[in-house]
Each structure stands twice: as structure tokens, then as C-alpha cells.
Image (spheres, one colour):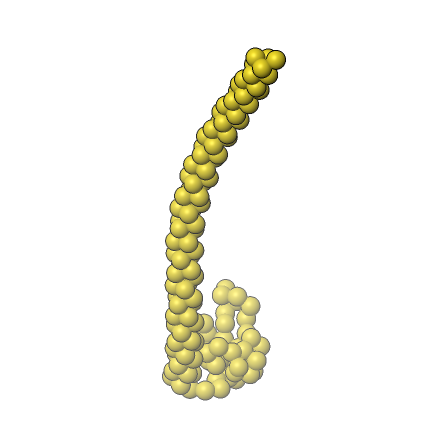
Length: 138
């Protein structure tokens, strides 16, 4: 950087730049420009520091809100996971119950089939007995 210059600054638009400090920039550090001082350097640095602290505080508050939201999301995920575990256990129990019912149903079908065979056998036996009695009676 060079000397403070009396002309308006091209880059800070008449002192509205970030530091409000006007200096000559030498060509080896970028495009040459110069301006006149618009505020004492210490005041400009204090103001900029104050602005940065306010911005930092705002970012901290935003970060706290994000952390709170993230915590809520983590809790929702945890709750959802617990519900899914409970639902899986219930589905497993229902599947076991369905298998038991299916086995019971198969057993009952076999019992019904056996009873039907016995009833048919008894019916046939009674018919034969009735025929035999009719034959004997004649």
C-alpha cells in the first residue's frame, strides 16, 4: 500500500467500502486506485469490528436454532426407529400366530376328513345292516 491520496476512491465508492479506509494501492498488489480518508482509521476499524461481532452473534443464534432443529430431527428419527422396531416385533408375532392358525386349520381339516370318512363308513354299515334285516325278514 502507498500513501493516502486526495482523490475519491474507485473501489470503495467514496468511503463506502468495508473498512472506509482510503489508501493508494500499488500496481503490484492489484489494480491501482486511491482515495481520500473519510473516517479516522481507528473509528473505522472499531465500527467494522462491531459489525463483525454483531454478525457473529447472529450466526451463533442461527447455529443454536440449527442445533435445536437437528436435535428434534434426531429425536424424531429415534422415535421412528423405536416405532419400527415395535411394528416389526408385532408383525413377527402376527406371523407366528398366523402359522399356528394355519397348522390348526390343517389339523382341523384332517379331523373333519376323518370324521366324514367315519360317518360314511357308519352310514354304509347301517345300510348293510338294514339290507341284511330286510333280507332276513323276507
